[in-house]
Image 1: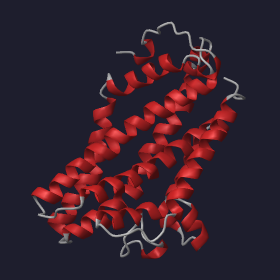
Image 2: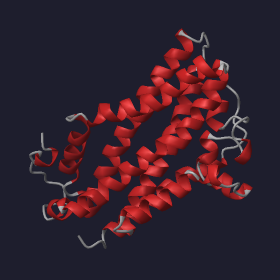
Image 3: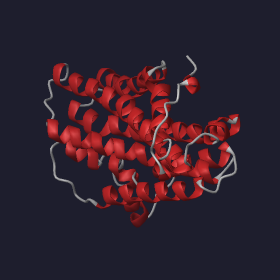
Length: 266
């Protein structure tokens, strides 16, 4: 099925939201009426649950350690790639193919175009990359490992996982409105995503970026639980600064993307 051929239904919406409902329907169709969503879910299951199983069977680590440390390090290192590629391709893919120019020649405002992509991709990321693999993981910890993790703490931790991935999705979408080439977008976004692994950042930078949500303090990431790890274990959070800072970055990136999309030549 050609998702770009989704029929457009006349709407009476005016202002900056003009065309949002139709564009959102088209973006949701690209996720849920094709094989894309379950392919994304299988990739996430392979990395998250596959690594969890390997740690359990081969590493001999305790279930608590796998849940609060090993698994989160895999998510922090691997899954941002999916979020970055998703955000990059949602904008640059359509610009390079000419689809963006064609779609925007219809009764569709540019902010509505960007917002529809953000909402649809954010929902797709939540379901396929966070919800499905971690529901499987929770069942594995309970049924196989015999570890009854606190449901509320686990759910809150998954909220931090989603915030972590949403940061990279929005970052990539913003960069895709600033640059025409994939190289700068991918290079900058991946540099941010893997900064905690590549060098030892200063404490102030470590607190202002999302790294601490899923990794321990800088070079102690392999032994110290992250903020999400504390929640999984039912422990109080040592700080809220990285959570607040990450949310504010998401708002800032979104605002810049909305400002820039009005000025992009298609």
